[in-house]
Length: 383
Image 1 (cartoon, rainbow, N blue to C red):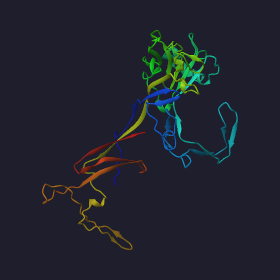
Image 2: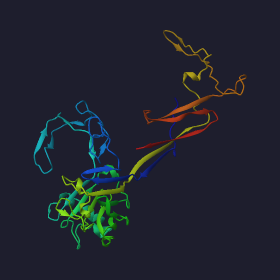
Image 3: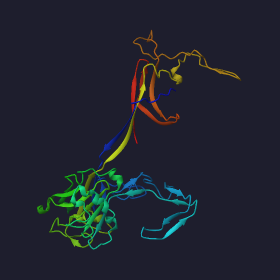
């Protein structure tokens, strides 16, 4: 089997940028991704063993009976480790001796999260942790300022939507965010970041006087949406959004997925595109003229040739003269076509510098290789 080294220009490295689109529809504490229906499983409410609106990381233990063997992560401690017994607020710790096996569980799921911070809440740890990031975005818009003359994120009602990175990848695409607020199925208002600077501007609503107002900002690289729009979207409708009965406001967008709050009349629609950067390697493998026209496949040798090797206690000798099978077609049964060495390429192996096989490329159909032919195969690997 011949080996060929990639030459200069045969290996091309590139980055493929894609923009996967996601839609979250939220209604009565349920989330739906891209409007997909939940498929019931044999051992759980869904095939993926995850709640509606959640993505299953690695897609492990799908539709599996957990009373039997299942896949789970584990780790053996190599030295004394300390693990918290409960939340980060707890100071309690437990020591695991060396060699202790600690088990985890699958599936791991993720979905968007809504948090509401009333003006009376002075802690706001999750929101305060974004202070440096929001101030960093200040060059895009003054609305990013954590504290300003007009308002402070610490002193007003704020709604926070957190999006896991598994959805948006390297970031949320600028200009792709759209948020629609519905009451009893009727559209009340819509927000878009049409200026592509992170400002969420109301573009349509039941109360036209609110159109053009900035209701929040998007942290594109971090996947957060901060909502500060506290104006009424429909003065004739009130509902329990958690703090109290109130008219629909942007700060309550997605409130039904938080805790036990249920807003049977309100529903929410969130659209955005992620940015996925996929490193790719393209390799050009050449089958040049006069090369790769011999095969170790037994069918390469004519069956009329005596191929029986001579063996003894001290030797093993194969026949020196073995006739190659002529498979050149002819328009007539006799004479046959002129002899020509022909092989068929079905696989291309990629090896490292130590000649370890690291990848195999299969062609869709065997490629006929004559001595006069020259082929270049383009192999592409997404990392």
